[in-house]
Length: 241
Length: 241
DNA sequence: ATGGCTATTATGTCTGCACATATTCCTCAG
DNA sequence: CTGAGGAATATGTGCAGACATAATAGCCAT
Image 1 (cartoon, rainbow over the protein chains, first blue to last red):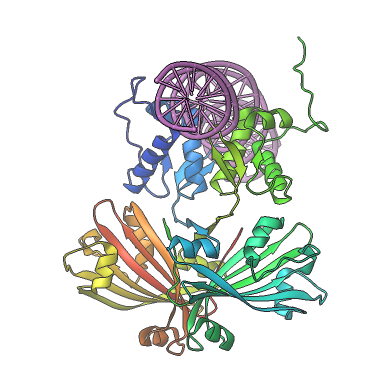
Image 2 (cartoon, protein in one colour):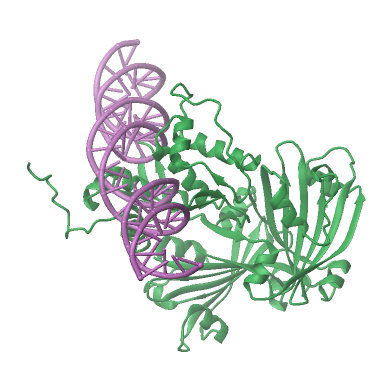
């Protein structure tokens, strides 16, 4: 695809910021002025066309490359991504925020709190070889009194301070984000039938399709926690493209 | 010429790029050297400490702000995000790519192709008031011969060229991404029980928990398509934090 | 006190320049 | 014809300086 020759070249151009340039480039891609897989003009050419410095164009193009719209290679130039592996950034709010954002009252009940050895599958997820005991916490989150999320969590007791926090008052998650350093984590979404326990807690029939969020987090040296959230039917995770 | 008073705080720093600075700042946050909600030093102070230009620090901090780790306000300074509304960026690949990436052979069968008026719910999603007929396409995607994804799609016929493409050869999605300009879209994930048709197509029991991806896309003026993907059990959408 | 003006300050953005680095392309020797 | 090697080129990154913008803090007059 031949890049369109620019109509308005010259120093007398409206002052364009990098955001305006990003928008204009995106427009040309979306309207197929620049087709998928096609090469777009060099930074220098665009800087000339838009009447700004190359660094400004660079800023705009880098953002678009980050979001997967463009593919850039030194010397090879910049081309429009041919096969759009769309990257969607979705926000994963804290449960309480999420419920309160809908104008409902958040509350939770600590259903269980036991120190015991987790199943092998959990230990494996946390990358632990030995069978060490961990704190098993089960919590039910409610929105306006209605069960919303069932939380099943294993927590490494070594991250707890000596007088352990009272998790029946402060939710485990909120204590963690406020108090424990983490380095990396991992999150996964899936759909699974409700277990007997989940069905009971969420007041749905066993086998009901539940949306599952599973998160694992580690500190630099040790695992911190594994948590599985079972969302009541109707839950949707949504974002714009 | 007198060397610049480069009295570095602490040990001498190697030449640091913006990525190194981002990493170091992130480390200080993760290890709680800088606590959640706390103010971090100004760009100028950091530039001095790291022995680089303010622009370099700015680049690093901006990235961290984009990813939700920092919150920045003019004059107020930069602070560590108190409540980590974690943003996860997940990649949404084309089905064929996803299957082939697992080393399996991708194939698909066009189950249905009819021009008719969609249900009101679909029209509403697409933002259409009048009851116009649209192309209804149902496709089953297979991985190595095993049903993987059931695709239920409504397509605005006005985006089709005169000799309509043969969707039994080229998958609708791939034709679309290669041929149709879009401006905005919307994607949502949920869990739902398999309908009779989905159960039949995916060879699972009715009511089985299925992971659902629902996407809507528009051009600047008109809706393009609404599509709902029902993934066979075991499907997981995963990403790092 | 209170309201409003101003000075201060941290970040946001841009410019113009420089050099680094990765690729491609072309030339030339074998 | 083929492969090695160097020139050309587009992007990646960095620096110093400048001005813009937003929000705070302090001051003054009422």
